[in-house]
Length: 515
Image (cartoon, rainbow, N blue to C red; front, side):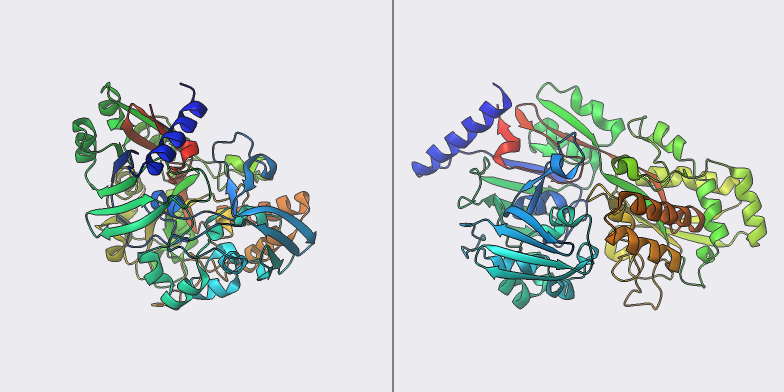
């Protein structure tokens, strides 16, 4: 049966079942490496994303399966049914009517305006909101957004996690942390419960404004060990499993009752340097440059990822298209690395690199290979393996570097290289509460070029600004991109579901059915 027919059939069956008072829709159980503590609209950590995408809707919807990376080919109406640019700094959105939150409260234009407002950013800072001066409900159907200057990617911002609409009064009253522990959105599934270290449960929102959700219940089970996730799939205890490593994919594929799907994610695994603190050995950029030059990234792609991905072209992404900067990252050059270390007077001091074990697929293996290669040029890198992000203490800067990832939330260099690395709201550039230092002391030239990139509507001017930023990144090395990871999902063979090139898992009727 064709996919569209399957989807329509599932929706018809769901509607009939509900009308008869008996919910015959299936439920699924998903094995995930971890259950995150919060799942608010702005929570974008890898293993929060599968939950968040189903609890919330966005102001503008993004088609992640589109092969056309343009705004016109990728973005479509969501909680806003239409939009118009009034002048260089003013946009008006028409708000979808008849939408309710999971608690039964009607969604209003005031809720939509609040989602992208500086008022919300004061409660929970976000780099996505940096250019927005004001957002207000003009009437019951209209939201007006005013930006600080021309914003060439405003629609992309509305299609990013910033566009996840929350109930304004509830969010303000509860605060971000409490709200995000028990989130309320407008999406096809509503949050039911979370048991730390065990499970998180969603149930169908049958008042959903869109097509009736095809699943009655979704249960995410915390299963940290890869071997156990695969065993759970084989025995039928789990219907789906997240984050199957490439070298374990065959174990799933050989089972007739199972299948795998793989996608190169819109994400980079990277190592962030705590370089702003003069007390850290990596404060000297020659040390950072040496680590970049002695990082065997092609080897990591070929050996650890089995050639499924590729080494990025510097700090560029393929999706930048004509906007891509023209200077690639320097090639692997251990001799030049040794010379830089000698010039810096490096004498074997310990460089502490922290990472959360098992959180990122293949990260532990990649860092072990890198550690061996770094040792060949004289770098003494100590791997600080942590069980969770609390232990990693990433907010602090009294260690040298840490492993993390960054998503491409819109097809432009502003994400992530300005969203995360601007001196005002960038999560990797601003001072931490525990320290006067941020991860990177952003150079004035980078900040100036970033402002141009953020506000110019001229493609040539914007590309020149990104070129300046890229030159600075190559020279100063605030972080070291490794590769774009590949995410592999294992699931029952009778499930028709398409993964997106991010960690979102979409269980709306348009993307899920059972044959």
